[in-house]
Length: 113
Image 1 (cartoon, rainbow, N blue to C red):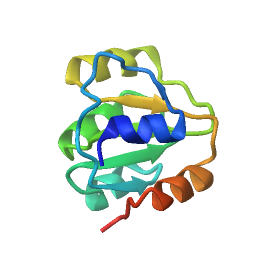
Image 2 (spheres, rainbow, N blue to C red):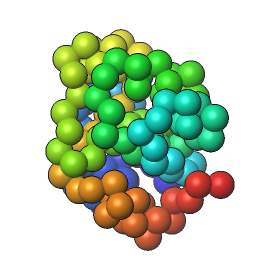
Image 3 (cartoon, rainbow, N blue to C red):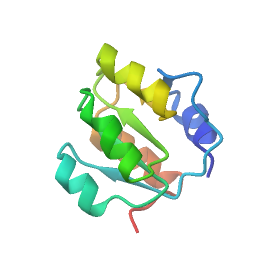
């Protein structure tokens, strides 16, 4: 599934419009612990979190994630947004809770395999 399809299906707000939104999303992972994401998220996954600080970009880049979705109306910090644009890491936001968003992603066919 393409990232743009997820954005459209779930009405996500794109915080990094210059990032590549045509990437393939192979699965999803939800966690607020960087070490957990580094140990368990897979290449091409989308990451769901409440974290907004700069380190999320480093983790997303290291793991070659397709993007980051910030839940609960979280907004990325200014330095985070700047680095995401530099690294071409898409960041999206939603007012939904992680629980609701993950259920919707699951219904779209995404899994954590």
